[in-house]
Amino acid sequence: MNLDTVLSMETDGLGPLHSPVLLVALSGWFDVGDTATSALERFVDPDTAVTVAEIDADPFYDFTQERPYVEIVEGEVRVLRWPENRFRVCRGDGTRDLVVLLGVEPHLAWPTYADAVVTVAERLGCEAVVTVGAQAEAVPHTRTPMVTGSTTNAELANRLGLSRPSYQGITGVAGVLQTALEARDVPAVSLRVGIPHYLANAEHPQAVEALHLHLAHVLGVPAEPAPADEIARWRSLHDEAVEHDVQLAMYVKMLEQEHDRRAEAAIPSADDLGEQFEQFLRDQRDDE
Image 1: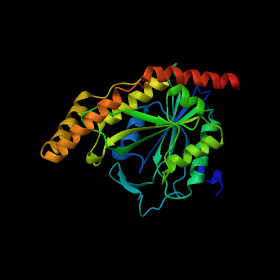
Image 2: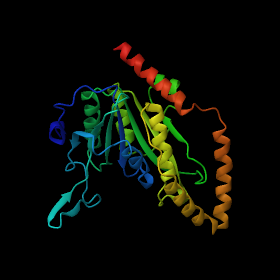
Image 3: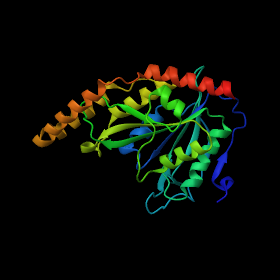
């Protein structure tokens, strides 16, 4: 499959980007409750974001699984909406520029898909790539979820206090993308937030908020806090789902104790991570 047939890119008039970083979130296996995609959507201002590239859906999806949508526009025009993988540039107003890929995990041709993503990162001069996800884990809904991460880059792992990947087993396209980035010497980080597995089918605005704010601190870009009433409303719904099940309530208490124990461990703050991340990128520029 020829990359030029699946990747369209238009950067005329874009101008130079300021220390760009590519953020990637794909709905599907690594996006429980649409948490990761929702967190990245908050970085995208629809009035100012500029679409610079798209990946054609046709070669990558089984449309019996990821079906297109039919919409009626202005009461009469029927429009087909196919799965989208769109790269948008979000200017930082003096801070770092972001390139945001919000898409759908493909079913087919993963190496070609990953090649398209890495190619966009390279052509736009992205200094690093951050893949973002959410997984069902043994965590309590009553605590602010922790954002954890890993990287294959030894220097990044040391500076940011991240783990080196140790997981062995089946993976999603994010794992394939991380391997492709490593092969092309593009610094890459994988961040994820845990979703209570006993409430995996619910919405989790608290996790969205934690992921969004953590990213903003580390990247040094502004972020507006989410409305507290939406987080409180879902917290109340989660509480109601648990309180009528005695065994589940006891299990949540156990998860709270384990979460609090882990939270007491010495981990870098988001501000510390931001300083170290920026220093790493400066060092990369000096080396180049």
